[in-house]
Length: 246
Image 1: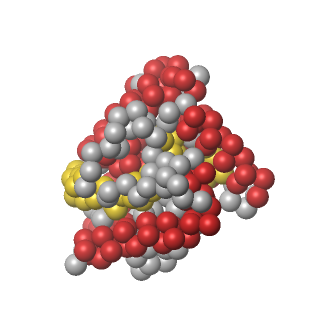
Image 2 (image 1 turned 120 degrees about the vertical axis):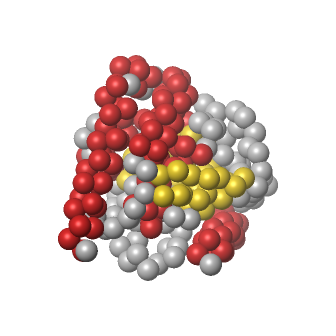
Image 3 (image 1 turned 90 degrees about the vertical axis):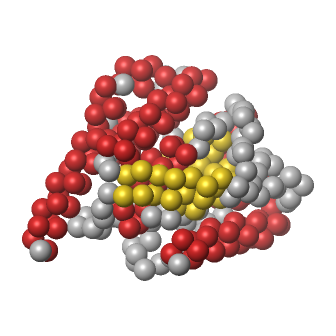
């Protein structure tokens, strides 16, 4: 039985990466043109949402979203979520309609095709470099000033121990949100670890449940309130994960 599972996982993982590549190849001219100028990014974002939805559905995933609130159009938000899978990127793009830019690790820029556009359109950070981390704030400020939102996975990476329900949060997302006085929108991804974790021989097609929580305001808050807001955000996501798992 294990032998057949290994064959299925191997073929399915290969299929997933093929499904990632196909829309990028088909839409390459449009993706390339829309990534040439920062003011054209909203067009790139719409194409990226098509890519994300195609990849998820073609790989056998379907998602449901429970929204506690309706986000305002043309308003910048800080989007944060738990991080357990490569599919977190696709799912975030699929469920959030307000254009945003990812802040992510440089390693993903090495992925063929995907990495090319990831490097051109996202804010990359080398977490081992304090200079790189500071540069993130300057680039994020420029994007926020142009009316875009920001998305950060505040755990700072996927925990190597998959028994961890939710790792501790880093400060970056909350510092940015306070400095720019933008609301934080927590999202809880219930099933991504079970569906497509970083363990190669694991996962299965199926449902991906999402809960988009009420925005947490930062208006009038100062950097001294950062820990309080960070802990409040983590508590919202953690309790929702416990509800999903129950």
